[in-house]
Image (cartoon, one colour):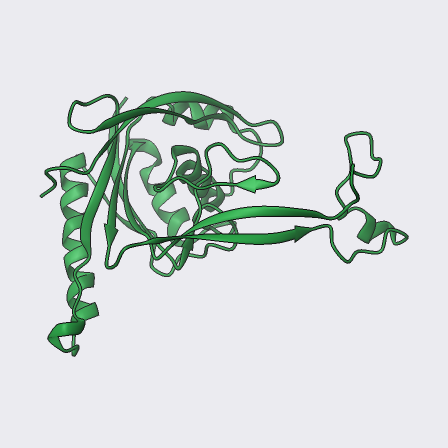
Length: 245
C-alpha cells in the first residue's frame, strides 16, 4: 500500500485518552491512543457507524506520538454526577437517568458518581501513516470537519489547528513537528523577561513495535469496528524517554 505521513497537533487545556475505562471510572493514558486518533479523523470525515472497511485500511499502519511540554503536565481528577436532578415522570428526562439493561431502576438509585481523569496542559504531535489516496480527503476534513473534533472527550476542545501538513516520510513529519514546537516557543517567549521564558521541549515519544530503547507494553487500541458495538485488537508500543535529542 502506498502511504503518506500526516502531522496532527494536539494541544488543549484538557485531553483524555482512555484505553481501559469503565462507566464509573474514566482513566486516561499519558498520550493519545490509536483508536482516539482515528476516531477524531473519522469524526472530521463524517464517517459514522461501524466503518469496518475504512478502519481496516489503517489497522497495520503506524502511529508515532511526540509528547512536548512547557511545564510539568498534571492529572486532573474530576467528579461528575450522572442522572442527577431529572424528573422520572417526564418521559424525556427519564431517558437520561441510568437504568439496568432491562430498563429497571439501577441498583442504589438512578444517580451515579463517576470519576474522570484529564491531562492538563499536554501537547502532542501525532505522526500518522495514512493511505495515499485518502490524504486529500482527510486533510480537507480536518480543516473543515463534518462533526466536531475533540481530544479524547467532547469537552476537550483543541486550542490550535489539528492538521499541519502531509509528508513523504515519518522523519519529514517529525522534523516539521520539532520546527513547529520551536516556533511556538519563540512566540510564547516574545516580549517576556528572561525568567519567564519557557521552551516547548520533547518529553517522550511512543512508537509502534518493540524496541530496546524504552519500555514496551501492549495496548488494546487498534479499532476494528466503531458504532454501538466497538471492537479492538492489540498492538505493541514502546515509550522512549531516554536519550531524546
